[in-house]
Length: 380
Image (tube, rainbow, N blue to C red; front, side, top):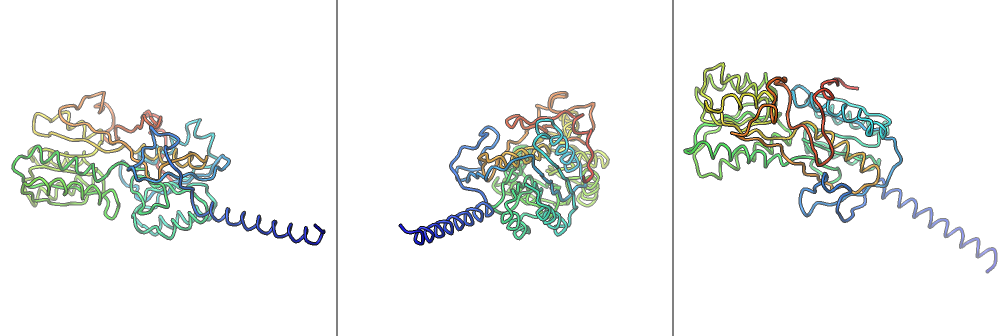
């Protein structure tokens, strides 16, 4: 072979290699490789269904810059969630993997939350964890994150896409659980007060749909009065008080949050205690434990704000190139009458404004109240 033809072939090979590298780079920027399971941590990362895809992102050297883009903040769950996120990021084993952990809460303005995520993308963060204000409004920013090779993990209020990782409990199943509790304890049907969450969020919609699926499928006759409580005690208390003033009587109640305020409204109005399907606030469980014999028979179920810690753990594992499901299903924390026990699943000497069951032992995630309450809810 003469030098001329060798040179031509070398140039051709170099060009092909350059093109291959270019294609490979685009592929990496375009998202993860779809691989077979199981996940790197099968006890923690339970796939949502047997059809759930498994993602493997290219391993990236740490430490990492991770951001939490939260929306709504004005209730106990979200405040505890922000504090839990900061507490988790401060744990020595986690902190060693983080170069920066940024938290921003933007309120109920969807555009503001999208703008915050765009800012994180432009600033070159490695991963963004998001509690989405609306599941369907984020398509352009999801594409931007994917094109930039940034891992996006949605939790609690998830995103309507398979281009991000979702971490959540079965929110519709939770609504079904509450609805079935009312069906079981109200033999002839009746009038139900449904205290909803934040409008437009996937959690509110899914829980609402589950409640109505259970009630509608029971064959009993129901009249459901809906009010908006925003998962917040004062808001839910006022909405309940107004509903009682107008409707006079309810045969049962289901509330997505703000449940302590709902029960307080019953007490203030002199309304009889009735069967109640609700969340996991410590104050609500105190009431359920104290007034069971008076008719407040409760199903208290949900997921503590520690699911944000699972989302951060997922982001870190994905950045390290570990296999994770596209959609992770977390277990519910459930206590039902007559199993409320002070010191075990609620704490009479602790604040009402605390969600109990704030741990995921299968993921190695647990917190003391001191760890969480030592943090602030402010942006950082």
